[in-house]
Length: 449
Image (cartoon, rainbow, N blue to C red; front, top):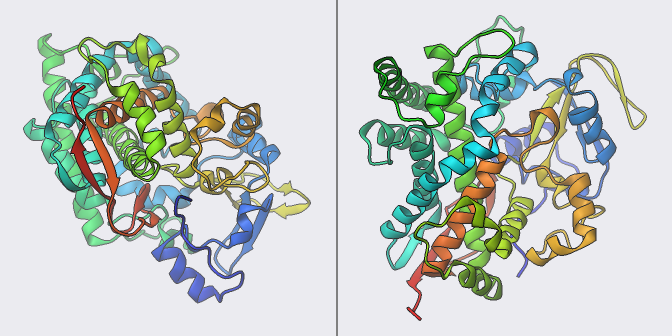
């Protein structure tokens, strides 16, 4: 079975209709030719942009000259109510200072320390699940949020403040688009930007709940009773170059992106992985075999025993990258494949198109976890696989996300048979790639052998 993707729009539509399609579904608004083009140029009265699928252009923007292509304000506009000046939205020296403080908390040694909390969240997820029909995106969101709270603040999702963050985020997720279309208009920087009232209110509520978590932890640190978890490490670590330490408001911004990056993206990938296994019984059986084990005391060092599950998760990230598009901005005149780009042109890097590109992958729309054992796939991945971005701005939590996704997937499928229900889900881009009407699966406990 070929995994679903939005039907590409016709090659030519009017500007007004394209704007409506873009607002309703950024994935379905793209023409079919982008799945085989090395580059596309878009000109409107409001903006000039390039979509770069050429691996050489990707390397230029992300690895060779990343400082010349900062993150675009066009994306920051849409996420500002929630993320403030977090590491996801900043550029330049401010971003570098933030990364120097954050990166040490997500090193391999720290991940090993956080892994038992991940396992606790996986066990809690399996205990919550029941036989019958479920909307699996909601269950995946619950599980991923639990992982974040346990590893970041050493509390389960049942904690009052943690539950408040999760509840408000559910309201925010579907009100905020990946790109704020209003931000594409050429308004001067001093003019205020507008967001949906529901988006503003949900973001305010989320940040209020996060502030309470941060305040509680700051008090615990002051009293010398704070647990040695990710939040404590980040809040007490000084920038080795400047001595700067995150203050209260900065920490609220960072926790907001940790929650978005560590919960929303992981939930998206886990839900799609479960759907793909529900529609591919042979692959599901192989994951179930890896998940049929005694999980008590399972350690980070044993993740290599879940090799096929890891390939399933990698293949899911290829087909359904949680962040389908990233946007950079030119800071000087450039020439891309013979086309001239002025200062301020937008450069769109699209994992959604790269990962399904007809000239970069064999059978690009097919779900084939075994491809990851081939040299062809390894070469394609080297050139055009970036679910966590690439270069200096690669996601600092990439290793964290991979460990979490593989663990949750193996644990759930090891306990339950999953089957698809109803028509295939249609992916759309909200904050991440989600299903337009959710993903419904039928769960059944596996027979005890």
